[in-house]
Amino acid sequence: MQHEELYLQDIVESVGAVEKFLQNIEKDEFLASDLLQSAVIHKFMIIGEAAARLTDELKARYPNTPWKKIVGLRNITAHAYFSIDWEAIWETVTNHLEPLREEVNKILQNEFPDFELRSDTK
Image (tube, rainbow, N blue to C red; front, side, top):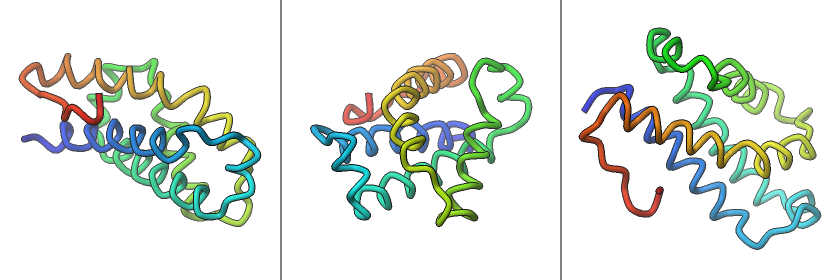
């Protein structure tokens, strides 16, 4: 299995984990919970690290995916943790993670046609 495939799978699985963490959770509950915030940020760091490790060639084939923003968010969460805008994190979770998962699933299908995503991350 190629590294690119593993990194893309890490992104999909981490998005799925965030969705599970926040299932039936309202914004106010998220904003008040250090536990939920920590769990989400951890998965954001995995997503960003995986995106950073993808080759420039692969990222260039999918220019509509916001690779730089994904990596940039990872850098903020890792190095500026105490200045995180939790409202912006909530907005990212609620508006951008599902489209990211869909995009990365398409990339996996295009790049690795024999790849089969685990059933719990589809």
